[in-house]
Every structure is written in C-alpha cells, then in structure tokens.
Image 1 (cartoon, rainbow, N blue to C red):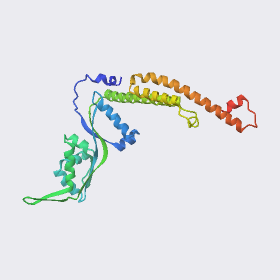
Image 2 (spheres, rainbow, N blue to C red):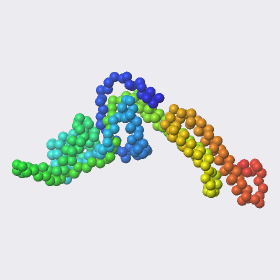
Image 3 (cartoon, rainbow, N blue to C red):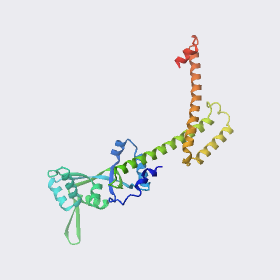
Image 4 (tube, rainbow, N blue to C red):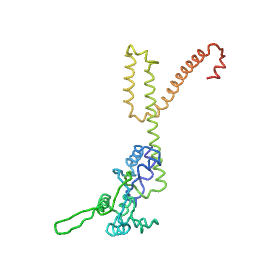
Length: 289
C-alpha cells in the first residue's frame, strides 16, 4: 500500500536532474518540525530505502562557513582573487543584493556552494581551512608557514544528503502521503503491541502485593511466560495487526470498565463511611459521582 502511493511515477521518463547535495541544519529543523532528531533521521531513512531512492543520506556535517579577515575588506578581496570558493560565495551574495565591498567577513552554506560548482565538499573545506595559514618559500628546499590573519570557522551541524531537484507537485504530494501512511502503520502496530502488553500483565496481576508476598503463584507465573512467548512470536507479524487491534480495543474497553466499576464502588464506600451520620438516596449518590 505504501509503495503504491508512488507507483505511478516508476515508469516516468529519465530525470534531467541527477541530484544535488544539500544540508539541513539539525537544530533549526527540530524546532521547525517539533520532532526529535531521531524521528527526522527515521523519516529520511524511509525516503532512502524507498524503491525510488528519493534521497541518499551521508554523514552529518557542518554546513555553515564563517570567514573573518582581521586586516579588513582589502584582505577579503585579495583572498577572493586567489580562492575560487570565496569568490563564488561573494558573487552569490552580490546576486542576492548583499554588498561586501566594505565588509571583512562572509558567511555561506559550503555544501550548497560546492554542489553548485560541481566541486567535492572535502577539497573545498580543506582549501578554506588553509586560508588561515600563509605559506612562504624563502629559499629552495625550505618552506615556512605562519598565521595569515584569517579565521575560518565551520558550524551548524546538519543533515547531509543528495536529492532530486526537479520533483513535480504530484511527486511531492506522493512523498508526503507515503511518509504519512508509513508513520500511521507503525503507530497502529506499536499501539496494538502496547495494548497487548497491558492485557497480558493485567491478566496475571494481583489486586495488591499482600496476596503474593508469602507464596509464589506457579499458575500465574507459567501463564505470564506463555503470554510473553506468544507476544514475541507474533511481534513481527504485521499482517495480523489490524485484527489484533480491533480485538485488543474491545478487550481493553472491557478491562477499563471493570476497573472503573471497582474504583467507583470503593469511592462510594469511602464516601458513606466518612458521612455515616447522614442518609443518601441512590439518586443523590448518582448525582455526586
């Protein structure tokens, strides 16, 4: 059922876009989606394991590069003339209307920049780090290094992946539907298992600890072992989840009703004991509880 949500796109023509590397800041994504990091990673894994391979996950990386020149704007322009990544970053900033003529620092997404120019990320990151050092060769066979007055920092731990950039609106809707159906199926299965655990433990439980404090109930112990064995034997059988879910809901409602009846009886008895000097009709007690 989940795969059928995207089945209509399997026979489509080959894509023009072969994929782009992108990075999503982890903390910003967590705050925006109100999900834990593990949950977001799980959704990305679902997209990667899908037959369409919507994303290709890579190791998390620091995606934001902050370059600071302590010698002022002139040093930044000098670096841009000999460092292509910095030149491209400044050019992109100018296209967005940001002028760095009088600026001595620049901040940019190094993952997106490397992908837009067809460069590998690691060499670009290495070249940017080397800007912090000045290499000079005073005589043949001798090479000295020193601080260049440039600070390069990488921050913003991000999810790193490769994905298509030409998805249609129908495909995007189908991807969302696939994830929604997948999550709903897992939620129903997990809820069914939780209810099965509740029913199993409730079946072998005692009303209070004094009943089982002196002697061990071999019958209930054996019953619990068998219930646990049956639970783990059928845990991976998702085909029966719907049937078990309906059955467990009915059983859980009956168990809840019994518990409520016992609690209500106890509450009424406690109330009459406290108010023993007063008389209450059945209608009055019903109104109170």
